Length: 166
Image (cartoon, rainbow, N blue to C red; front, side, top):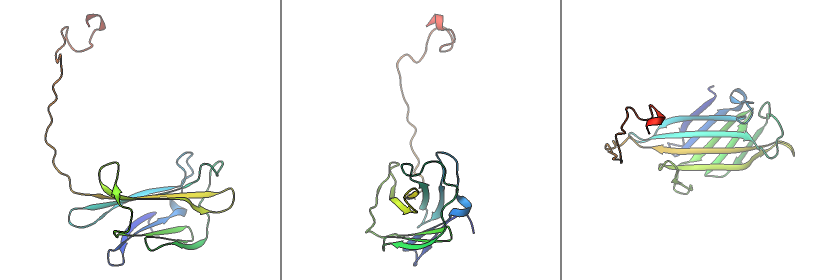
């Protein structure tokens, strides 16, 4: 299995993000946890970028978490469902109008899912989850923009070639 895979389910009405947390877990300070993204074709020329991030809660965890805990669990609802089996997490996201769709900071339509806390192991270890589902449409050509400024030319050679001349 790959470290991260994205595919459709339920006749393309759901998007599944499957992450192998055992193979993809990182212990780099400040960037520890699991982070991956992948693109998948949607309709026509549109593409969906699905990003998943799971990390130890910084306020709870002191130091590094060497690995994601092992266990089995199912939870969630009909909009977002989580399934954890032997450090393999499957997030099933329904592509329906009931989801809280919005315009992302990039100006593209998308969905932002944040679960804080996502998983409580015990009183000292807690994990958070963030996921972005962003729709990318084919590129629209942008016209050239000409900018005009004052004093385009400076006497004395190249600009700032000698500070004594300016």
